[in-house]
Amino acid sequence: MSAPVVIVGTGLAGYNLAREFRKLDSETPLVLITADDGRSYSKPMLSTGFGKNKDADGLSMAEPGAMAEQLKAEVRTHTRISGIDPGHKRLWIGEEAVNYRDLILAWGAETVRVPVQGDAADLIFPINDLEDYARFRAAAAGKRRVLLLGAGLIGCEFANDLILGGYEVHLVAPCEQVMPTLLHPAAATAVQAGLESLGARFHLGPVLNRLQRVADGLEAHLSDGQVIACDLVVSAIGLRPRIDLAAAAGLVVNRGVVVDRHLKTSHANIYALGDCAEVDGLNLLYVMPLMSCARALAQTLAGNPTAVSYGPMPITVKTPVCPLVVSPVPRGREGEWHVEGQGADIKALCRDAQGNLLGYALTGAAVMEKLALNKELPPLLA
Ligand SMILES: Cc1cc2nc3c(=O)[nH]c(=O)nc-3n(C[C@H](O)[C@H](O)[C@H](O)COP(=O)(O)OP(=O)(O)OC[C@H]3O[C@@H](n4cnc5c(N)ncnc54)[C@H](O)[C@@H]3O)c2cc1C
Image (tube, rainbow, N blue to C red; front, side, top):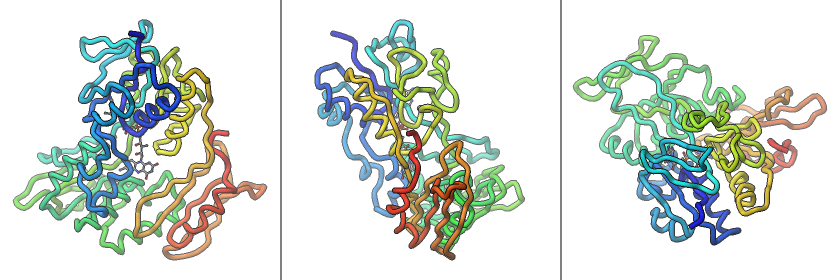
């Protein structure tokens, strides 16, 4: 048998690439390898599970066996690759070597962890895949009070969703506003006020130093001296592209695994896409870019070399209490922000000296304007 196309990862990047590839090539042997259980699910739905009343099984869309059949592929679950040997076109799973024709890294990003003192660090839950989510749901059953670490996009989405699920939520983050790297302060104020109107309590500035078991739950000791009573902690303090195995194999890495517009790494026959990939300098941890990459890379793997390009890619944040759509200013562009509206309905627009729209943040009723504004936005990767 000729060596297969091997995809590492069965997240949205891995499975969508496999699907796009099979539209073009139904014959080449295809193997998908994943460290998790290989169920197909949409990760963005993890922060809507309580509002939609769905547990981990409810969010799963297909078992790995069904995916294997649909994709005419072998899907190896609970299998962690441990090394890559680009010189011999093979990878390692412990002692086992697997040869590849082409290798695609779609192994995602991992949650950033911070050290916390105390005897209850095991009650800090990262939620970055369906199995994490199942563990969290099991631990949260019958509990009432959740402390959320991080006030970024994912922290705010979980805050909204957990409150819909009936939990009391405290957010702790060492920044001055929610979504600091993403959002104009006026829009951040609107989102925070929306979450507060639901009952969320924000503690912006301090970090969690110590988490301790007490008689009726946990005590979270913050760096500013506050002590918050809670039952468990969700960590949403950020994601870091997985690069270690790639670096160890001699592939060029930066923030992510470095690839060109053809999604090719610094080694022949090895490609990357999704959260782990830095595409022409851009590491975007969202679904839209990985879908564009999957379509382009499928063409390349099927013998038709195709470069990826990104149009505008605004992000819809799932905080139903205060709808939010944001399109950050592309790298290397500078402009001035103008803010209109008040309260929950904010329209913040960034324009360059010529008046061209570079980015925006829309909240509340202002999100209605997104379609018109999207037409004016510059592409992210022309
Ligand atoms: C709560 C939440 C909400 C989100 N909401 C949105 C949203 O609304 N809109 C949006 O655009 N984006 C959203 N995102 C981001 C989006 O979900 C991700 O960008 C996308 O799912 C990444 O897909 P991926 O396939 O690259 O990575 P992943 O889904 O992380 O998949 C990685 C795969 O690689 C496997 N793997 C890792 N290491 C190894 C190894 N050594 N060996 C074998 N397998 C390995 C894993 O098991 C897994 O199968 C959200 C993310 C989160 C966490």
